[in-house]
Amino acid sequence: MSALFNLQSLLLVILLLICTCAHVHQIFPAILDRNKTGLMGVFWKSARIGERLSPYMSLWCLFMAGSIFLSS
Image 1 (cartoon, rainbow, N blue to C red):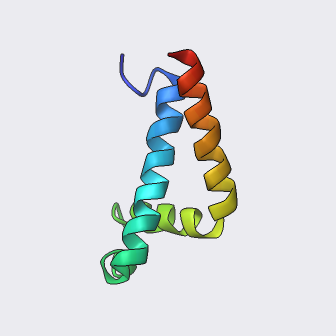
Image 2 (spheres, one colour):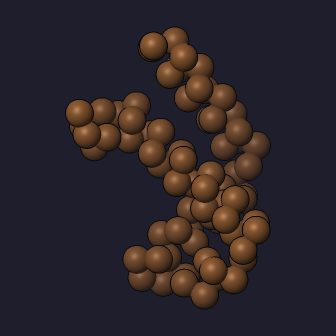
């Protein structure tokens, strides 16, 4: 089943995208800062979300981990 048709998988993909972009932006800020518009702008915006909502993102990660653990 595709992640587009399963809500839990879709949320997990979005969460992983945000966390990965925030981590890449912390290590290599120039890569995402020069691409703020267009298709690559999605990654820059995801990095911003991950940086500014860091405590909430960590809680969301714990919630998703518990949800996946309980559903297995």
